[in-house]
Image 1 (tube, rainbow, N blue to C red):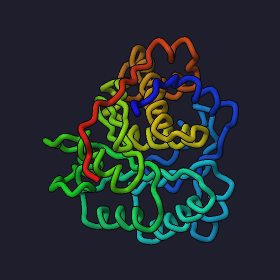
Image 2: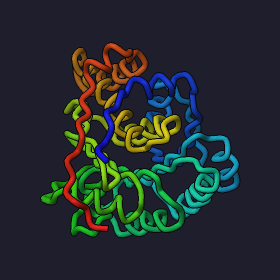
Image 3: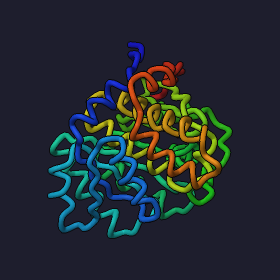
Length: 275
């Protein structure tokens, strides 16, 4: 069955009305920005990393965002507790494989999380996702390296293997569950000039997934709205500093007319992925 057309603003509007709690166990470098972007979009972010409260906090959340950008063994163990709790409750779990491919430790912990609980959405840049797909790729810290592979195919195969939605961020974002998918063409090159847009994208997807059961649609809609906010911010930004400031304002002020006019979400043409 072909992917259905998305009205991104409808999901954004629902999220603003519900104001879902989005539990983060995330990157210390970008933790404030992740909280702030969820807040300006209309969600209610909470950042709780202690294993002693991981399960309890997850029980009150509508989605769970895990980000291994500044991982430690202890943090990963807390993530496992939260992810298993979310699975039991039926709460969507997103894993941002931040820096996968940079070190064997990150690779190993990513797979530990994938095996310890069901991950509903896996998000990363091209080199992070390619590395988790088994390709001999090295990530430049947390920045993407060039990948000379068919990322649509790799993402689709991974999605089928783990029964999840895979998001590959880049100039055009790939969103697929292995059978259907979308290509999100919103955004601006200046997003690559500030630290944290990848982490913020994961948080936005988590917020949208909190109110939209179709996680394929939730991910594509969240990325589109985030990208539209970036496009608007870039028009008046004088550089990365003012761009970041205006990004939050643009996300806060998104309206139906603007989103419907600028939304660029196309069906993704997939080759048959291996299962």
